[in-house]
Image (tube, one colour):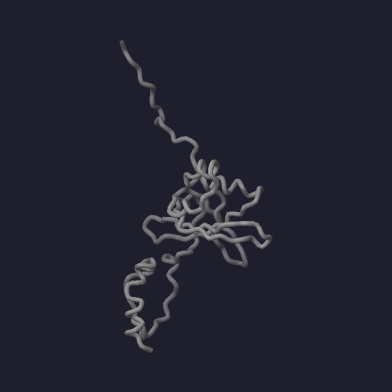
Length: 170
């Protein structure tokens, strides 16, 4: 195997493709491997505790359900303070019955008014941020993160608790 040729072809590609999260210590092409356990704390798809999290949309992929309905798979990045990011995929199904989730998703990322007036423009979705609620889902005896709802605020609070209205003396 010509490792010099391979190395010249891929030199610098790891960082460009976002693989730097796997660690910066390099292993040689012909290095001997040690049997080490998987480090769950660095897994991109590790199980998070149930709860509310901030997210950023990384990507959107178009598809169809098994029954032929349109859907998109949104690839979400959840930032966990002091730890590596966690990736969660969510399928948004395009049916009248599931429209509530599309509405809450677009409200969460701040694009609902645009989606309401001009339609859902999925090109505007990547890099948008919002908030969601995660629960656990068990499938084939394995537990996964599942987005159960997207969170949004209707109007931000302006007053602080126990704040008195201003009075003016003449």
